[in-house]
Picture 1 (tube, rainbow, N blue to C red):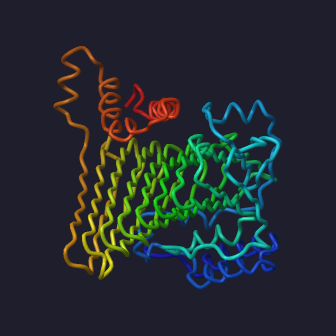
Picture 2: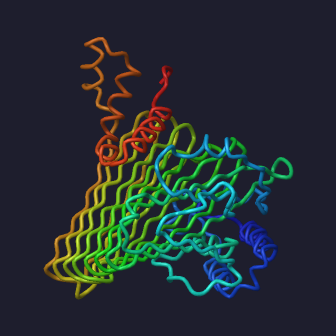
Amino acid sequence: MDGFPSKNNANILQQWSGLFKCHGGESSLHALAHWRQAQRIGWPTRKHEDWKYTPIEMFLDQQFIEPISLLINTDQCNSLALNIEAYRLVFIDGRFNAKLSDPHIGDYRFELVKNNTLQTLPDPIQPEFFLHLTESLAQETSLIYISDSKDNTIPIYLLHISTGKAVNEGKINAAHHRHHLIIECGAQAEVIEHYVSLSNTKHFTGARLTVNVGDNAKLSHYKLVFESHTSYHFAHNDIILGYNAYVKSDSFLLGAGLTRHNTSAKFNGTGSQLNINSLLLPIGKEIGDTRTYIEHNKGYCHSQQLHKIAVCDTAKAIFNGMIKVAKHAIKTDGKMTNHNLLISKEAEVNTKPQLEIYADDVKCRHGATVGYLDEEQLFYMQSRGIDNTAAKKIIMFAFASELTENITNKILQQLVLTYIAQRLPKDNV
């Protein structure tokens, strides 16, 4: 289908508009500006190239409502949280929960701002409808300041829990999270962004994280999406790098029935380095869509990306990446690699890596591969007594290992491996 009746599109916009007004969005200049941008862009359809393979027409039959949260006690929270040494901040259905969060977070400075009093945040690097939707519907914004301190060797841990409770069947909680990190000059930090579901009740998560990385600053960032297979997860991470900054961002997208994850970055200072990696493993009838957009605006910067996707059953996956080099960004070195593995004959993947270069004296390259499981490898292992399912699991773990082996926190690494194991082919595959 190329598109959908404008009446349906108007109905879904009217539904989101009702939520916007219910939130009191018109009293916030920030929210109002983004809502107007969402209206200007309009509801995306398959006629838009960027939405050709992401079936958001399923939203036209859904009714999204203001989240109705269940009470979560400490034991429930701990059972969902990572068991690691970190300063924990907990957000339930888009709202900060002080009782479940750590009362002291070292030298990090945390400020919770209601959006009707919010001052201007950085402009989106790659604006689109759902980005503006999250900006306009988020009720509060977390501002986290990271200074040059020895105490920052302890990670800051952002735990997001969706309870999924709705008034009645057919209505879906829609929660929106908004965070902004300021990593000051010379500072270093590790940030873990973690999304989980309390139940299998269908829900929508909108998430937006923006990061300003100061001169000579360093950031290690992990994004973990472990939500239920009935959920929708739409996220936008923006990273702005100053002079001689270093950022490594790893995303493990191992949940949600429909995932669309965007990472955008902008080099605003020379001599900086950025590593972006992701692992996407859709199973069943899930659909995973991961996208990156990198702007090299200054010279002598290096970006490297590795995105791996393994698709099981009748699931589908999409990758779209862009490296854009500005006219004066000489000595840019950019590399983008996307490897895709199809576990079944019914699995599907669409990949589109792109380069847009306006400068001379640069080194940029991209590559993508798509293939099925190697039958010779399977036969070799089976001939040595390894059954078909176990052989597939070994190949899958090997496929993901290039990303998982780079997780420095061993507890976090083991958790990711556990989630990967839960999504590997079962005995009947």
